[in-house]
Image (tube, rainbow, N blue to C red):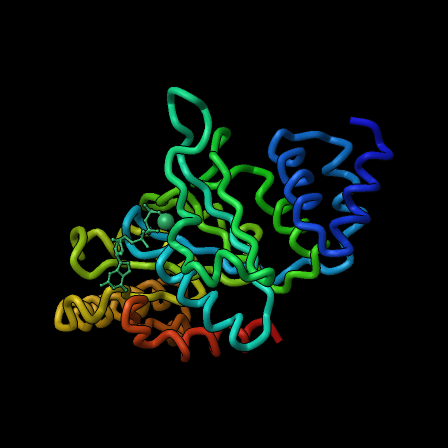
Amino acid sequence: MARGDTSSLISRARRGDKQAASRLMTLVIRRDAKTIRAVRRAVIRTPFIVGLNGDGGSGKTSLIVRLTQEFRQKGHKVGIINYEPPDPDSGGMYIEDRMRLSPEQLLDPGIFFRTVAVRRECDGVDKNAADLCKIFGLLGFEIVFVEPKGTAQGQTGIRKFSSVVIFTLDPMAGDEKQLSKDARLAKADIICVTKTENAPVQAERMRLKIIDELELSAAARGKAKSIIPVRLVDSRSALGIEELSQEILERKK
Ligand SMILES: Nc1nc2c(ncn2[C@@H]2O[C@H](COP(=O)(O)OP(=O)(O)OP(=O)(O)O)[C@@H](O)[C@H]2O)c(=O)[nH]1
Ligand SMILES: [Mg+2]
């Protein structure tokens, strides 16, 4: 691609043109070196990046959609990067999680949802995730959610470029004993037990178990106490969502 084209795409993205931003994203995903360099040079303000970590089905997208609603009400423009596995036949997108947004959200100019097929995977995200986030910065978006393809135990790559990492756990899934082996726990900034209204007793039990694990892990590192908050949330009923959004914004200051 000619250099002039990249500059014009960058100028258009700076004026809020989402089509130009989308084209830049495609070039970054394809690892066009000139575009990556130009984007890095052009960005004045990298957005605040909220990375979601958690098993497949643990409620990451639902939480993002709910928090997006909160942040829009507070006047913040929100970008979302959603990594999905590629369709093995077409190489294109397998699942289109954009449809999880409400009709109002789909029409909202202050929301930009980009699904990316993760090919050269690193802990559920592509290696150029940080550069993609910068393109939202060109558009003037202040907050970007990044959802990896569901991660497994020990996958904490999202930590490298996120301003805040939220780790989601479904109280009804999996074995609590596995928590002690999971590096995602101690590498999170905020832990959310999701789907609380579905199983309030199990959710509270899991919250207490997580706190135990965090205290043990803090002690092993010579710390008096863990400072990682553990929250009970529910994206359907919005339980705990307002408080969580406040906590994220506090960290953005
Ligand atoms: N009742 C209830 N259901 C939820 C909640 N969060 C997620 N779900 C449901 O749980 C399922 C998985 O939720 P997702 O938000 O797609 O989970 P995910 O972590 O994004 O899943 P992947 O993208 O496949 O890794 C969906 O059927 C959701 O409707 C919640 O807070 N309450
Ligand atoms: Mg999802």
